[in-house]
Length: 143
Image (cartoon, rainbow, N blue to C red):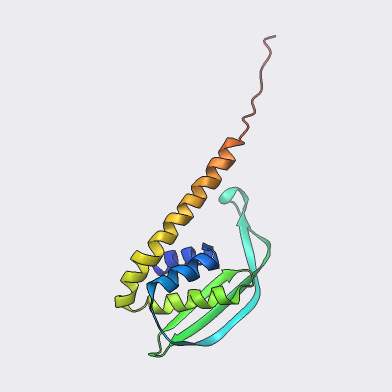
C-alpha cells in the first residue's frame, strides 16, 4: 500500500475505529510531537464538471501533526476538522509504517480491514442514493 493510500484511509476512518484497530496491533512505539497537533484552515478547490477550470470553493478546518519516533523516524498526519488526537495517531501510524517489520502488519492487520469497512460504507451510501434516484424524461407530442 502506498503512503498516499494509507493517509487517505486513515483520514477517512472515524477516530474510534482507528484507535481500536491500532490498539489491537499492540505496537508500542514511543514518540514525541515535533509539530502540533495544530488546527488551521485549508483552501478547498473544485472544478466545474470535474474537468473544467479550477476555482476556490472555500475553506475547511484541518488539523495536522508530525511525530518523531525515538529512532528519529518522522510521521505526518492530517485530518479534516479539529480532532487533534486523530491527527497525532495518523502521524504515529505513518511513522511506524516507515519500518518494514511494522509496515507489513499495519497494511495487513489494520489497513485492510479499514479499507473493507470504508468500501462497505461507500457501497451502502451509493445504494441509498440509487434507491431515491428519479429519471426525468420529456414526452414529445406527435403533431
